[in-house]
Image 1 (cartoon, rainbow, N blue to C red):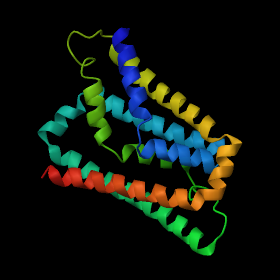
Image 2: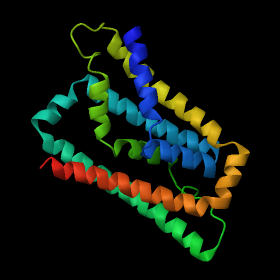
Image 3: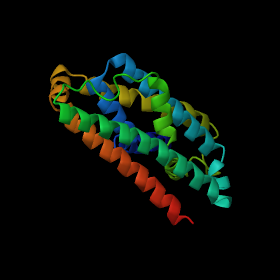
Length: 208
């Protein structure tokens, strides 16, 4: 039980660290409805299910033997993050030039669930993170029940923590602040997403 709590605590800290997932949830909660944000959170949580399952099945061993697989995933993931970043940056700059009230670059998305899912899956380095965090769970001395517990608890924890973040960012005062400075937030968000994309590409190139 102590090992399980330790892993959950580490995941909680990592989950709220600056990154595409946290940025997307915060931005969506401040600029769109709770329903849309919950769809994004559900997509992110399903992405976590994929990464946790691959980790527990030992997929990282394949990446060690054939690192080109991870390189391809990182390059493709970087392209997705760069596309999102460009859209946010372009929308923010256009709003600043026209001096119009920004509803948010996420306001007219067709599928919020897929946006959350693809944003999470766009970062294959999460697999390395889970491999490190789950190293004790994958050892021969770990309880046989620990793996299925993690496969369920970690995605649920992801959903609950991000739902809590959504509630905070949905506070009327925060949403009002976003409406006043949404253009600048979109520009900043776009720059950060582009940074995450370049970071992935740089790491992929270093692996050559």
